[in-house]
Image 1 (cartoon, rainbow over the protein chains, first blue to last red):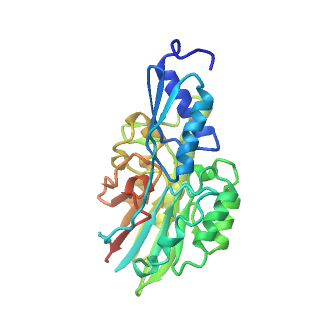
Image 2 (cartoon, rainbow over the protein chains, first blue to last red; image 1 turned 45 degrees about the horizontal axis):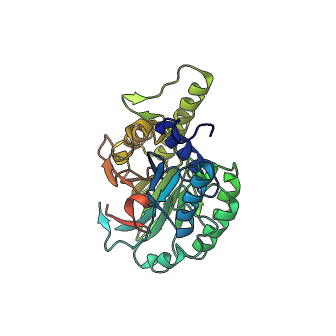
Image 3 (tube, rainbow over the protein chains, first blue to last red; image 1 turned 30 degrees about the vertical axis):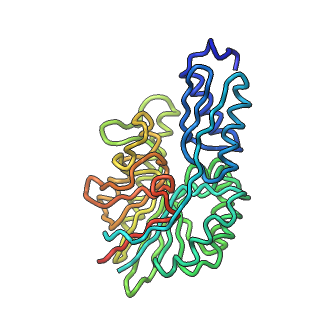
Length: 87
Length: 237
C-alpha cells in the first residue's frame, strides 16, 4: 500500500484488507468484519479455530505494518440441537 | 417420518481433523440422512477434502452433498468430488439421489447454484460478454435444476443448494452483495416443481428461516448461522 495511515481514505483500507483476507490462503475468509478507526484496525466475526483467528491478525499486520491491529475475532463453539424442527 | 440433518459452510482445512466426527458418532440415532450444503473446504484444496473424507468415512447413514464456491477456488473440484464419493458421499451437481427411509422414498436434488440476484434487483443477459456470461451461467444452472427437480419422483423431495434461492434468508448480509449470494431463478424452478424443504448455505451473515414465493420452507444451514454442527428437520408426508 502506497499511502500511510493519515493519507488513505478508510473505505479503501477496509476494502484492501477484506480482499487480502479473502485471497490469502492462511485465511480465505470473506466474512471477517473490518473497521478502521484512525490508525487502528478492528477485526470482528468468528472463525472455526484459534489458529485461524490468529492468522487473520497476522495477515492484516503484514499488509498494514503502520496500523495497530485489534483482533476481536472469536472462535465458534458448536453444540448439537436439542430437538428436530418439525416441518 | 424422515429426519434429515444438514449443515453447510463447514470450511474444512488441514487443521480440522476431529472437529466433525465426534458429532457424527451419534447422528445416526437422530437422523436418517446427512446433507452438506457446500463450502466443505477452506479453499478447494484436495488436502482439505482428504481430512473431511476421513471424518465422513464409515458414518452409518447416507450422506449427500453439494459443493460451494470455496470448493472451486483451486480449480480442483473434480478431485474433491471424487474423494468424497470414494467414502460413500453422494455429491450432486445438477443431479439427484433417492434413499429409502422408513418405507418412503426420500429424494434429494442438489446443485451448487450461482449468483445473479433476486426478482426486481437482479442481473440480466445483457451488456458486456462478461456480464452476459455471468448471468447465462446462472440461467443454465437453474434450467438444469428445473429438469432434475422435474425428474425427482419421491415421496419426500428436498432441494439442496449452496447459493440461496431466496433473499429472505440473506437478511443480515449487506444488501449490496445479495446478487453474489444467490438467484431467484432457483426458487422459481423449485416452486414450479414442488419440494418439502430447501436447504442452502453461503450466506454466513444471513438468517436461518424463510420460504420461497410459493411457500416452500427454506433453511439457511450455513454453520455460522445455525451455530451448531448440524440442524435436524423432521418431515412427515
